[in-house]
Amino acid sequence: MIEDRPRGPRRWIQVLLHVNDTPARTAAAYAVGVFWGFNPFFGLHTVGGLAVAFLFNLNRVAVLLGVYSNLPWIIIPFYASATMLGALLLGVGLPEGFRGRLVDAFALSFWQPEFWVELWALLEPLFWPFMVGSTVGAVILALIAYPVALALLRRFGRFPHRGSADC
Image (cartoon, rainbow, N blue to C red):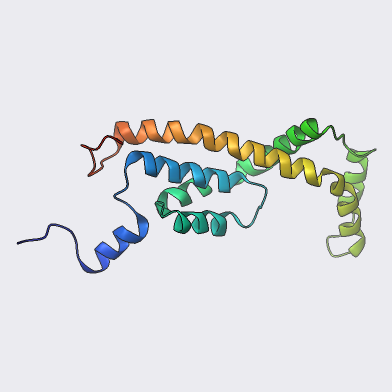
């Protein structure tokens, strides 16, 4: 009997990446990646996304595409908006004289300890609004990403599971 499944490194790569997943599982993997890409644990996005992908046996490529949806020109507006949302949800306002103190802090050199002390004193009251707001924002974006990715995958994707009920 001739086997039509690839062998060797190609099969290993397919198993590792889960490229033969159904559209629903691939869309879920993408949504998980989007959540990790926008969550408050900035700097741990890739590690967190891949850990969840391995833990739940998800398509690693789809997770990484979701993680890297948080592009450089999106980061500052997203986290600023998310922090404002968190502040609104928690009833926290900006520290007194925030703008002036921020300008004064950035007048100092990054190499001076005073810069970091002043920056922390200014941003510390916004820690929880940042955490709550960016978590809520990440969940909302992931909930939007799933149906959008699923619709696109069903429309344009090529999947070996076309006959399954999950497609």
